[in-house]
Length: 438
Image (cartoon, rainbow, N blue to C red; front, side):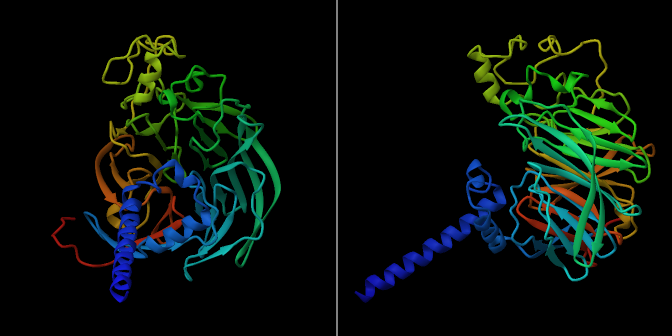
C-alpha cells in the first residue's frame, strides 16, 4: 500500500512538472491554449492567474548597444481580451492605461503600482487607441460602437479630464468624427489609431473583416474613396478628409514629434507586413499590391467557385495575385506607394511604433522603434537624413505580444502586452560582452 502511494505521489509530481513545463513552452511559442481560439473561452480570471504564475518578473536582453533590463508589472483584475487598448503618459508620475473593454488604470512610475479607476468607458464595444493633450487637459479616444449584430462605426471622441492623485475623471464628451455604419463588421479584428499633430487629428482605419479570403473583399473599402475604412482620415474642427488610402489592417500610427512626418504600420495577409512613410493623398496599395501571399483558405474557396469572381486565376503556390488578376478592383495605371520596409513572408503581426527622441538611450536617438504581436519583437530602424527611408535595422526579441509603446519623460520605454502586463524597459548599465563601436 505504501509503495503504491509513493508511486502515485511520484507520478503526480512528474505530471505536474510536465504540465508546468508545457505551459511555459506553450506561452513562449504561442501554442494551445495561448495561441488558439480556445484562449478566448478561458475565463479572464484564470488567464490572469496563469500568466501571472508563468511570466518572468525580470529579465535582461542584450542589444547591439545596450543591455536592457525588463521589469514586468501585471495589470490587476484586468478583463483583457488582447485585441486593443493603449497606454499614454499623463504626467511625470502616471501612465494612463485604457483596456479594449474600456477599463481605466493609472500606473505610478515611482511606486510601480497600478490603481484601478472607479469609472470606465462602458459605452463602447472596443477601445482601439487613446491620445492626450496634457497642456489643455484633453483626452481623445478611438473606439468602436456596435449597431446590431454585424454593424458598427469607428468614433473619435474628445473629453476634458481632471487627474486627482490616483483617480481620473472624464467629462464634456464630444464626438469629433464618426465613420459611416459598416454592416460587414468584425469590431475586434482590425487596427485603428489616433495621432494628434498640432490642431489636426489623424485616424487610421482598417477594413474590419476577418482574414477569410486574405482580406480581399467584394466591398473593396480600401480603394473606395466613398468609404472611411482602409484609410487614414485627417480631422480638424471644420471637416474630415481622406489623407491616405489603401490599407488593410493598420496597427500603428506615429510621428516625429511636432511634425507631420508620419509613419504607419499595416498587416499584410500571410506575411507582407509594412512600415510606411505616410504622404498626403498617397495610395498604399491594398488589395492591389502586397509583398505577402494569400492564405490557403482563399485558394480552397476560390477553387470551389464561391464568391470573388474578380480573381481571374490563382496558381498552386497561393502567391499574391497580380494587378491583371485584380483588374476588376485595381487600376493598373495608378501609382501605388511602396512601403519603406516590408517583412515579406515572415509572420510578424506588426503593431505600434514610436520615434525615439531622448538622451537616455542615446544610441537609439532619432530611430523609430516598432513593436510586433506574433513576432514578439521590437524592431529598431535607423532612418536616412530625410526621414523617409530605412537604412538599417535591429531585432530585439522580447518574447511577448506587444500592443502599444510609450516613451516616458526620462527616456525609458514602456510596452503594453496582450497577456496583461506593462513592461518597463531601461538600461541595466552593465557592460556588453563584446566591444561595440560608437
